[in-house]
Amino acid sequence: MPEIDLFKVDRLSDIIGNSFAIDALKRFAVSTNGNVHEKPLMIYGPSGVGKTASVMALANEYNWNVIELNAGDYRDGETIKKMLMPAANSRNIFGKRNLILMDEIDELAARFDNGASTAILELIKNSKNPIIFVANNFWNKKITFLRYAVNAVEFKRIDSKLIMLHLDRITKKWKLNIDKKILEMISVRAGGDCRSAINDLYIVMDSGKYNEEILNYVGLRDRKADIFSVLDKVFFANTLVAPLIALANSDLDNGMLIGWLDENISIRYKDAKELSTAYNNLSGATIFSSRAARSQYYGFWRYMNVLMGSGVSLAKLNYPSTVERYKFPKIINEMSKSKTDREKTKLVVEKLKKKIHANIKHITTNYLPLFKEMATNALKETDTDTVYEFFEKTYGLEKKEVELIINA
Image (cartoon, rainbow, N blue to C red; front, side, top):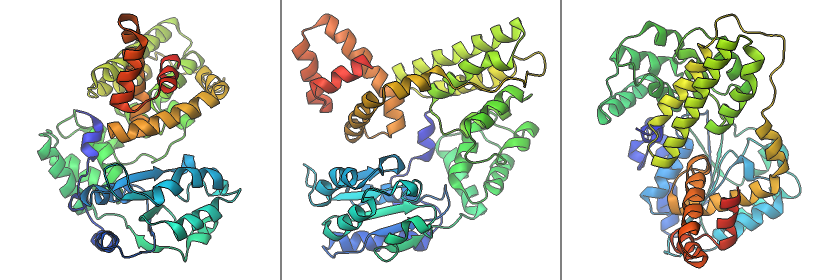
């Protein structure tokens, strides 16, 4: 079962807790659909309490088209104008109202230069469509310019009893054999972070019963561990669960995680048998990653995570070397050399997002390799024009965009 299914939210009634905030969202939507010009909303609160999920559910429930920017898109005023101003004053081709969603507005506040704040205020002033900002910290001084231009809606941490009920509902829906003691433990230790609780539920899905090892780890991890901390937990752990939690806590995609492990196994392990076992398990992880991409069945990720996490970790026969520092994987250097191509690829992914209705990471990691294989094989069997015409009609991709995918 794909991990994302555990997080899927279609309607506001699926959001747990924060009833006052949900009511504010509903009032905002009703007024907007009634052509009342409302101030943008600023939804703020701690991570994992359903802020962005609520906005997506709102858009789905009121049949709005979402135009989204996140932290990586806040560069300068011209970029913001180019990406958002047209959508702010029009509807999509099906007549749906556009919802401008600016997520993580406080994450890269340091990048608010070159007129970005002015562009955002101009967008607010001139937009005919609803705008919603999402932030963790509304009181961040770098976004003070928004303070009086929005209506603030606070999301608070979720009560553990509500999280427990939500996890119980998920386990019944997907017929997961998870012991109630584990669900209760996850709920309490989540600290009001529902997303974290669901991540922990996914980790223990295959356990199905009370397990002392799981009790020692679930819910006690840092929410945003850096890559060096993740590597330490993989190479120095002596249990099955600790590496899995470390990988689940990483913000890097599967390919980058595999790249970091591949580059650093030989730094931590010195024995030939250790190296052989670790690299063999990591190789198995890449096989399951590829299978998931080809088949679109992401249950394979479970085996991938076990092999590249627990498999690499338990390959050691001795305490790992701590003399050498971790090395950056070669892939990072290659990425810096191909910055222009990646920026072009990002635009392609944004276009595909509207067609495929998946997140950016999912499209980049899984769909682009699939499209590359489809196009490459098709070009061997049929004429060029037919192949490009197919991608244009089906996915709205121009010839140069298909060529970019093929040559990636």
